[in-house]
Length: 308
Image (tube, rainbow, N blue to C red):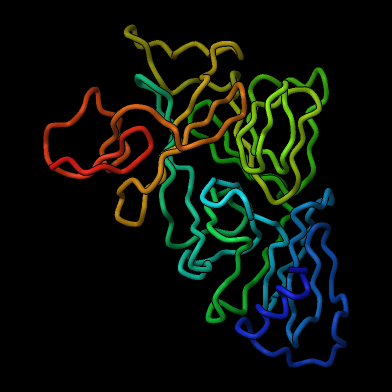
């Protein structure tokens, strides 16, 4: 299905009728990877997920329809990352998509990221997106929306020495870049890395030549930042070297009730992002040392099970 066919379908249910005269297909504004067109009688914002152009919105823009031109087919349920210049309610997303925020990263026996369900998002903040359809859309009751300015550049959320960065610009990590060995990103397309086939949406440890397109986010360990953790003597924990960084990080997705809805495992060396985690977890995403004896629901090896 082409983008214009999809837009025609979306146009039947989305937005408000524009109150000004414009021709079908007319470009009303160009902001790098974001183009405003008059389609199906509406001011439609088209976000081009494959563009290398920097998103530059210098003043707020009101639109009556939105389309994110990014094909999610084949990676349903696997996390992707996004950063959008507008706020949105999770309930506005099509039924087969949901937004989660990066809430914390913890290290006890294993490394884990907690990704909480959010009811409302903020403009210009990076999030995880879990999609179970070919593309995402918004309900008609969610329009119009305001595209906020993006002149502040990349947006960073810090979690101790870890940084989750949403980017509106194209970035390449060339040989010699100080971030190499510390940065992780999602593969935009299927490709081969070190002889291993990486699927779109998988998490890859960056190396020379790695890149990220606008409207996405990446994870970086910053060894120069002072650690929040303390050792037995009360001293800050020493920064990790690239070799000491975790091979696997569990990403625990919670629903609106705070219960675990999915657990994905990031293999930061191979780039594999799967739900094949090992061991027992309670419904709050906390890893258990052994099989529980109390009746209830748990996650075991990435799957929900019930102890009776």
